[in-house]
Length: 337
Ligand code: NDP
Ligand code: HSE
Image (cartoon, rainbow, N blue to C red; front, side, top):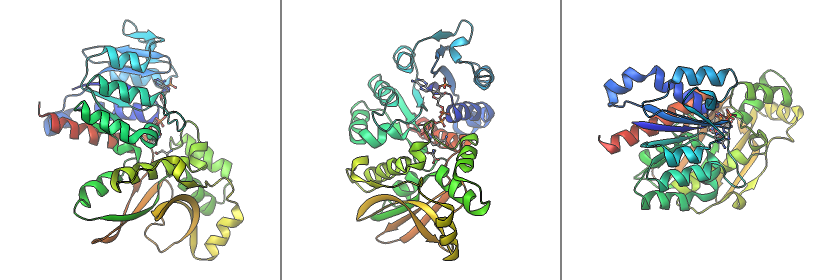
């Protein structure tokens, strides 16, 4: 299977590494023989129809260089869109930074992939929060898959749980900790007593935070994930503008101590129970939703099954890459080649 990878940061690189490390197993177990035929970053693109050398890409990116520097294969100044349009491939994996104002450059990457009849997988919340109905319609019209497991829950199959496991039920509401960075910050401020700034720096170093971390701490990342869940699983038609959003920038050490004294912890919670909102609230420590560190938790409230909570790592390179690989395996299965 020929793959174009756009974006080679924490997620894109982890995806390349996962394909390389699991090559034998992917072939023997799933009949998947992936070849990265093009890769792009901000410096340009590299292309090889026989498959780029993944170890070379990883080495180059870790030394801060662009794939455009690869001799004979790199082209400086060419864009991800150029790669999608010019390279023959079955699948595009999109992992550029999230932009919640215009959705770009990811929106163009998704649209171009679909219009050139390539299946597309993204970890990027921006285009989905801004243009979910249009993108799903375009994909369906062009008979290609648009997959985005990684956009909600990192490696945790939140969307799959709602879509597949609650298929015969009716989801009435959801409530969740949907952002790993803010949960990490609040946990570390609580348990180690470190400052907001130090905790955010650690979350950045661990690869959890967005390229623009204000999206995390001001609640927009949680809001975008809530919009995706609402539109996909609750048949709503929400955009970010419909949400009331408050982040954690004004949470103080004394707010955290006060919650502790009540047997609770402060968490950034996104919920749809009637209205849709994101805000820091106290959760009892005995509540299964009250998870620590980079973990996410999502409580589904459904008509027949009642309340169910799914918990798992909500951010991180390999965690997120595993969700992209899950989507890729689904596409492989649907292609039956
Ligand atoms: P990074 O900031 O680590 O990496 C972004 C990559 O995109 C870099 O390689 C950058 O290039 C490249 N890039 C930026 N602009 C362009 C462009 N116009 N064309 C081609 N490449 C471009 O981000 P992450 O890997 O952390 O995140 C990627 C996406 O995945 C985001 O949308 C994020 O929201 C989402 N996500 C992230 C998770 C995480 O845990 N990190 C979890 C779930 C989703 P260069 O290398 O030259 O700077
Ligand atoms: N920045 C996001 C988070 C990445 O911390 O949850 C996962 O979407």
